[in-house]
Length: 105
Length: 105
Image (cartoon, rainbow over all chains, first blue to last red; front, side):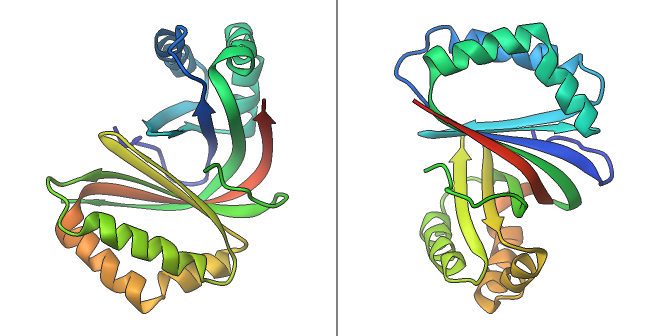
């Protein structure tokens, strides 16, 4: 559930969003996109949570890996549907993870 | 709800966690901590969501602002309670936000 990312540095894409009403195939598409992302070179993991606000953080080996995923044709189509149908508002932040630490009981 | 952050670059702290059972004053303390964080120099905003997994992303002007918040005495006490009581597991990632973009209907 908490992504098992490698040693820093690596990259994170923070996707924060407010959804429109209704599912409109969102859930099934989100699952498919996660499966596709996992097959991309340089994919490291994903973490998601949603209440009113949704936050999805995907982790990547490099900026190039993020760019390649952005250029994936299925991902391009789905992003168009996101803007047209699923999202009222979203923000995407491309980050370099410089340091991390973990706690486990 | 989506943090209104300034132009890049700025910093993000991604806090991903799995909670223990029961509230144990978690909710009231989380609210208090958010209020305290807002008073810190260099605080830019916060975004939170939780299902089984919780994700909280706080945004900061600089690494120094993040460090000063880490050294806040109330925050230190609360982090001890977090490890002892509220969390089964968490991961903290300190990131530099290099690029961002937004969509709004």
